[in-house]
Picture (cartoon, rainbow, N blue to C red):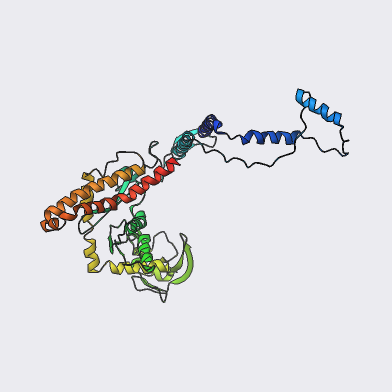
Length: 425
């Protein structure tokens, strides 16, 4: 009942504001349309017999009656139908009221528990995946930096150069989103700036199977130069038992060998999580007599053996990554990943962890300004540590600074122009 009452009041307020502000903008074609509808309803049906032709005296009498108002005028012939005027857009105040009503309805849906009779039972005692936490900033969300550190607001991603330590790109997103979800957008933004790094170094949050598949797909489309995602792919723990990576899988002959050297798994097509692949199940007779059964088979699986589900395309990508992560050059590249932590610390000193305004666009713009301040400070440090570089760039400092400003502020300026154009429209 509370939710229905709020929706009713907001709808009545919106209708009242529309009538109060949009009424003077009504087009003159509306009264004509209403009069035409009234004439259509009041017109009598055509008589079966044609009426006699009136005399000239009758015409004169009818004209006198029309002039004095004693009788209604005869219906005129319908003219051409004028097109209806398009409906007027709601004023900004009505649109703001609708947005506020939608935000209030979202808060009620996430936080309030209703009974079957419509009465409020209390607050919901369960986590909400996308719960709004602020009415003044609807983009803010709760998130976690770790198991013990909570975040209320936003997260920021930083793309930095390993060679010089300059910030190339920043991206602000909601705190409840996973870090690795935005890697395709970051790569696309770098491509728009004309930057195509050969090596993309990140932690395990960016080493998801979806991100590795995205980079492989870009390379398959003929991307020059080819890119490589240097990030370890998280592997399942499986409760301390043998994982799928410890099984030998021959994708060509479709045979599976367990860690104990047993074969003979039965194969069939299956679907899991909307993925179509092969399901291999070892017989109970094989797993029951195996000395490693307690390290392999789930204790809850009674009467069955170990089961593996394999999607061929994903499994090939996983197996290739498991081989690549053991190579020396991959380990050396991954050891450079902590360098970005110093960049993040410098960005925080320039105000990168403080949100001065509300809204994701405003926070993104402030983050870009903080990155610009860090880059200017970093540029001074680089020139001070390298006098020869400073001497060679002395005549080109202005051009270099302009390039840094354009590379960092282009996306934010375009975003602000788009937002301003939408508001003016």
